[in-house]
Image 1 (cartoon, helix red, strand yellow):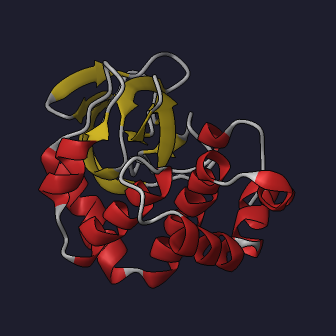
Image 2: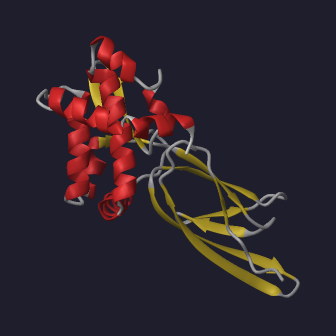
Length: 207
């Protein structure tokens, strides 16, 4: 865990208590988004999260991905605590005022951390979906299937899988060898807090 995220977790209770006491009553507060996100998790409302979160153009993210996220968070208290602390700290950046808030403000650009983050556009707050630009590392010339698309690994075994949002993903591959065709499959849950150009691996049994 890097320094920015450690700092967030270190003041998480302060942020949460300060915000939910001071900000939840305001319909235009960033803090209200934190409360709504918590509610999506509590009732596993993937559709609600999907409809109310903003996705960057060109990023693959579906209602099923949103459902997988809230289900995972409902079942994983540690991950839930981390994302709620991040969102609470971001909301405090926007909603807090005075010297007290400044002493707890963690970083200038609050969009730098989290699978989801709070953004402000034209005086309106929104939850944004993180875009991950994913590279697959595998065998050179392997054929990869991901999100119903086929890719061929380059001479270094790299495949640019494109941009995706948080969620559960499956990947398969085939590799032609002198001994015949090899197959491989794997899955991963994309929910990184600070690495947004991740590399994942798909290994073939080549021995």
